[in-house]
Length: 162
Image: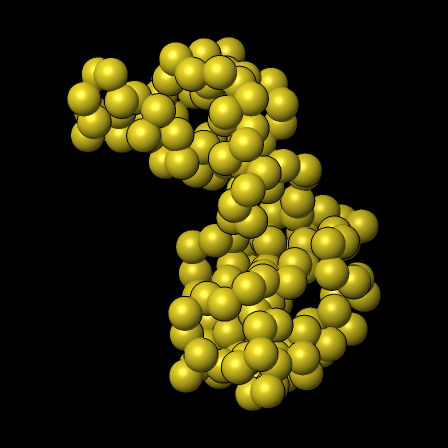
C-alpha cells in the first residue's frame, strides 16, 4: 500500500458523495488526495487509486495526464506555477517568470538540485485582474507578483519545514 489509512479515509469521504454505481466520479478528488500525500502520481499510485475506486487504471491515467494540476513526474517540494497566458503575460507574467527562473537557476519544467522548487508554466488561473499570478502546490494563489514579492515568497518557502 502506497497510501496511508488517513488518505484512504479522505478518499472514502469523497466516494460517499456519489451513488455506489458512480464511484469513478470521485477520481479527481482521490488523485488530489494521493498527490498531496505522495507529492506526485506514479503509475503504481494511479493503479492503487484505480483498484480502490474500481475503475480501469487507464481511465485513471487519462484523468491524471489530461489535467495539469496532477504531477505525473516527481516535482520539488514547492511547485510554483506561473500564469503565462496573455492577460498575465501583458501584465508582467513574463517578467515574473524570468525573475523566478533566474532566482532559482532553473527553467520551466525543471527542479532545483536540492529538490525544493519546480517551476512550471500555467494556463489561465482565473485571476487576470491580479496579474501576474503564481500558484504554489496547486493550493495557494499569489497575486501582483513583483520581483520583491517573488523574492519574499521563495525565502518564505525555503523556511518551510516538512
